[in-house]
Length: 533
Image 1: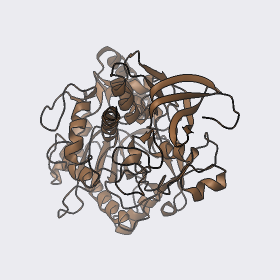
Image 2: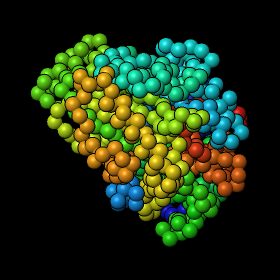
Image 3: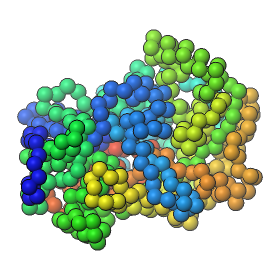
Image 4: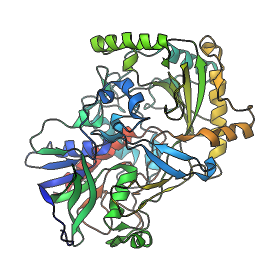
């Protein structure tokens, strides 16, 4: 499998090798390892998920803004942002981004999957896999599963100010919704979250158990796919400074995410020949769409000051309260440390004539300034507004042939002219909710407020401060056409023995948080692999 004379240590041979221990990868590997007589290797570039910041829900404040369990990527300068670079946190730990996200469980709406127009991936096709993954603690009906590995539950100690936010939104005429994955997505309410007994339920804790036929390699950074002719036969990876290979008897599955699955394909010679050849990468299969079709939810955060100590903040009184809450959490797994911060929210229409909601709100019980990378003394709250189905498309490209270099991430936010007006309308709705009487007792005014409520001022604020809300997809597009990167069974075109299963295969971004959809993709991928035997 190697022709350059390099020396490698042998990590063994398995039936399947899965690259990436995130939402989809853990589901693929865990499900395959349930089968007797099947051996599976899972490679994760990050460490084991031993950090308390992973398992305590409130620990997200220590992971998203930092490099702790996080790749902490940056985008290329964005033209619509005046050259400002965006920030792209991605989980670098067993569990992937499901180990550092806000644990929100939403799926989008049935039309999202029907619009993919890929056989086997309509809403009717994928719903059974959502249900198979899910163990919902409150809802058992035709849309929800009970008994699956992924615990989905209500917040154990919702913040009183989150209740006030919902009341303020209801007063504005928006409907109440206690199940965003139910018959209608529209409305406001509390999010259900992936947790069990007050602890995060990441994909790793859900799917990876002590199984004798599953080998988990952490701190294992995959650098390329190794081929025998056009058949994927192994993975080269670096671990603790040493180069190793692991071989696959049957198939290899890339589940490294929307940024690193296409990166690994291109490093292995599968991608746009015109981009690979100047980097000295031999082209195995010319596939111009690898890395293209990047989509993400652009998000604007409105910040509000408050004197309420019910909200998370930086102050002497706040520090004393957190100390007490830490004792409470250790004793009961309840209280402020059991929060996911983004406790409440909603899916709303900026125009009543629309068929589906086109914006999503996340109400956060603290100040989130620049992904919480900028600290502010005092207490407050934040309201995120994101556009659910953006028209803008970006790309993922190699920066160099160095497999350890971060890729070039260019979402081209707001490059489609129709995206900005939708966000402007959404921000106006958010400001109207926050001005409601239900929040008057805790809201002391907007921080970094736009200069006025005109379209021009709101657009100016969006360009100055908007960024991702962490849902990149699409860079290894699935389709039935020959230009797509993978086919309807997730097989990479132009080679054999290689599939992709993660957010990168989505033809279009779903209207909601993406972690649940990625686990569904992993469940579906495991089934597809079993069918080939």
